[in-house]
Length: 237
Ligand code: ATP
Image 1: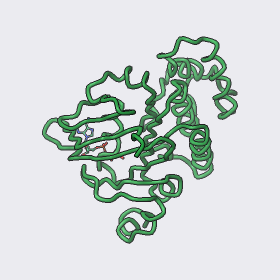
Image 2: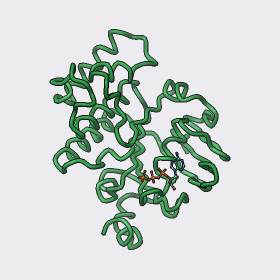
Image 3: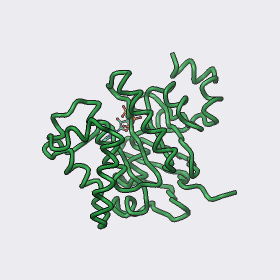
Image 4: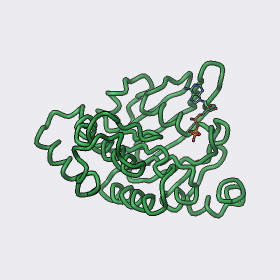
């Protein structure tokens, strides 16, 4: 067996008295798109925040490429090759599109490479190129989502954590964004995708996990999950 790119073992996360994650065991292999689906408040964002070390876990371990990152700093995790595109986009509203992208590359020092990568983002997302000097806060929701993904890509991740990329966006924009997610995957980026749109997520991913009230209740190939009666009833309406 090859070593997983990401492995979470028996992970628990609490927010004060609230137990957000209980005994999570999850694997993402190199080259996969894996999705984490579940209802509001199930703990999906918390899982991504634990991986990128934005929150501490109470128990358990997280490994990236065999190296334990359970207590690493967020910038160390980025340097190792993990980027996080958070829910709600969280772009820097008072900074331009260009500055947001430059900040996404904060761990890098290859100025020419950064410049070339920014131009590459503008080829992928022409709307961002047209708006490069515009303040991010004035972009549409879809454009902000594109910027959040492009900014994450600027750190040259091997593993991209995507939190709800379709949230609140019109169907056409969602199609554009998912087409870029597939392109990134084809370029060699492994993806852990959190989505409330379970159908879209399972149509995009190779494997999936179902999270319910902080616990993983089901896992399998995406094509099996999409036909699973429990998944259909709870998430595919
Ligand atoms: P959503 O899609 O609504 O964000 P989610 O599956 O991503 O849902 P989380 O945001 O991970 O869920 O939340 C998991 C649980 O932890 C919820 O009960 C939530 O209320 C709680 N929680 C999340 N963030 C905090 C926080 N900062 N302080 C206290 N409780 C929190």
